[in-house]
Amino acid sequence: MTENVTPERLSQVHEQALSDFSSIDSLESLQVFTAKVVGKKSSLGSWFKELKALDVEAKKELGPKLQQFKTYWEQACVAKQNELEAAALNQKLKSDFIDVTQSYPAQKGALHPLSQVQRHIETIFTGMGFEIADGPEVETEWHNFDALNVPANHPARDMQDTFFVSSAHEDSHQNSVLRTQTSNIQIRKMLEKGAPVRIIAPGRVYRNEDVDATHDAMFYQVEGLVVDKDISVSHLKGTLETMLSAVFSKPMKIRIRPGYFPFVEPGLEVDIWWEYTDKNGEEKGRWLEFCGAGMVHPNVLRNSGVDPEEFSGFAFGFGLTRLVMMKYGIEDIRLLSSNKREFLQQF
Image (cartoon, rainbow, N blue to C red):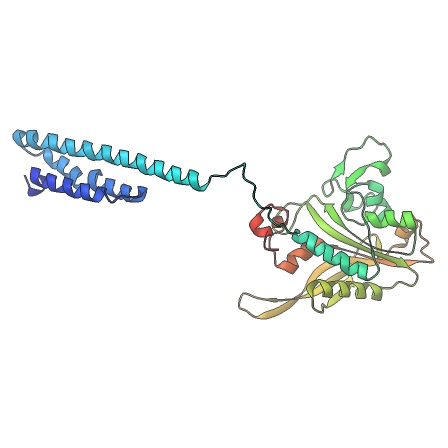
């Protein structure tokens, strides 16, 4: 029998435990105390193992004392745990309390970053004499495709790429579709008022896209249309440069290269020179694809009741959502359709 398992030693450990126990003020410190006093690796655990090797008289003397010590502290630790948990719960209820009868001052809201940039763009274009036009998001197949010189076998007509809406009409021109671009508005505007016309058409469009950080099934686009006499590509270039320079508050360079879009001839791709700072702090720049554009196809003018022999025009369409991401350095398009206040409150 060693000195560590004498009644005197057990009494000393008990007194020290009482002192330590009185200073416990958290569940974490209680957990440490419990492991030290009655845990498997505590002195008590070793004493119970050594008790087996003692003679009968020693077992009779120390056995009940060890069991009494163990029972006392197990019950004390459980009671302390209940006390600390109740105190923590009461504190949480107190701090989380909401008086539903109390009136709180209204918090000042802010425009969504998409709305901010859209309004800025509308101000820029109205300053250049453009009209803001609007139209239906659920559109007839004719306005969305046929009138824009997109034949029935065009890939954009594929059911896998576009959201079609069931229709009871047998006439294919009456089939409905969630518009794939706001170009449908240029058709409606020319049918309504003819030429000359100068409009932009911002709004939501829909594509059957796999949603990820840079793609979404619903996003915002801005369509631009100018139809008048003697309109040329130089007018298109000047209009886009003016708009982009105003949006980014600095002169912006663009380049124009050939591209194919069935509703314009010639079709053009417009790139912008994008300057940025890389991870190493170095200033760099590269060309970024910005929008599709071109001179309005004669068939589109005819479908809209405008004589292509008398009038010409240009059209362009760019992603407002992507422009917002570029302007504010947003890397995930899904944030713009989320309800995360900590993100939206930055703007």
